[in-house]
Image (tube, rainbow, N blue to C red; front, top):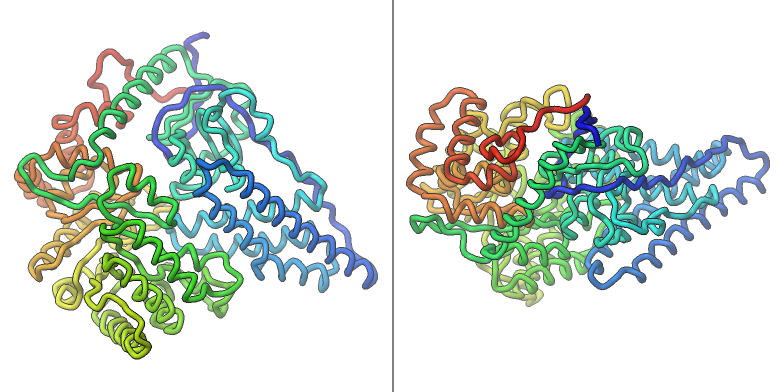
Length: 607
């Protein structure tokens, strides 16, 4: 191979690690979509029946896949259940039938129009990755029905007979679950995010993955040699010998390093000078508990409850929620679990919520505001949480997007109502269940001293706090460069919230993405955060750096950093500290590392 220029494409590092292998393009092929009008009531009735039969067949396909899943993947069956729910969602199912009947259009075109309308709704949502990745679920469900209508219901996954890097526009949950870990070296998709189903499965299987790599399926040809860097989101197409050697060496280093630190992942997160902090996991489905425990999670610092409310024909009932929370508490006992109440906007719940006009959903009826507006929904969830709290008395209740005291007072009033109802019915619950608030907006920081008098703990959601503090949408490519976790204003907000909490004698956690970034460990320790809650896969690295850090040194470091004036100045200071204190971490996970002279310095190749 010549040492020639190679092509680099960039996406989102969704599952860490390096993969080197030949490309396998997972192409379902173009679906021909005929456009014709239906004449006569008989033709309309037959087309409606054809659509209904296609949906039923799609449901049966997903059910068969669930039954055939190997035991090691059984925990991912819920991902397929999401697809099944979407197939019957009124915004797609009923709307498609309406197009067929009222506009007399053919079934494929009716489905496409329904999907387009649903995706437009999701595209208008706030920047939270969790919500935006539901577009992929809608795409996958619709694609399956359209293919059945076109007589093309098949998958190419069965044709993978050798170890390869899978390249696709997207992988549906059904596709992802059918991947064979022994034959899948890496994954590259054009769409998706860090919490997409593809990312979750890839991380659980230990497969390096890059999502959101635009035009990957167009730029990559079958059997192209690829390097997939799941740390940085970079994909190199037909690399040079020099690049291959560099990444082969790096691959060995990463694997050796991760194996080494994983052996100590279950040790406590205690600094070298004896300061203990919590190391906890953020999860959204029970199936992630295994990964959390395997990676050394001491507790569940954030349980996202939105799963049971998304893509449903009707509201989940109290019993369904109770069983989920009961199992969570039981599986984690005696360790603590923090359950966050519903953190969605009304614009995301069109199946069973009134269709509200939300010109700016990120600043609209969402999170605690939604719960206080629709009190019966809130009370149903609170009853389920309270009932589950009796299992092991290890549940904490947490409210999202609190902006002031009024929301705390009203939420407490409703909680007391529910407690009174359960007491009258002699239904047991933990009367001392801790009650906490998420600090995610500047107004909450401003009144943190008052909030701290009314709650038992704080958890700082850095994702939203950064966005609202700086006033940017991190999903907007034109201003994404302004999304700076180390912005002086953000760090000062975190410090103010921590100080207010500690002055009132309550613990303060961080559950946003900052908690799972090893580079920020010295900063968060120096800011005196009590517990770090993160994606389970990040735990071994973060715990390793915590155990090798000095609390006193981190506090002195933050005293200097808090006086710096720009994010870039702070970034440089943090990088120097990490490079000096943890050179092996910096070397294998920072693409700009040049300290190891045995490896070539990487330059941007091609275009």
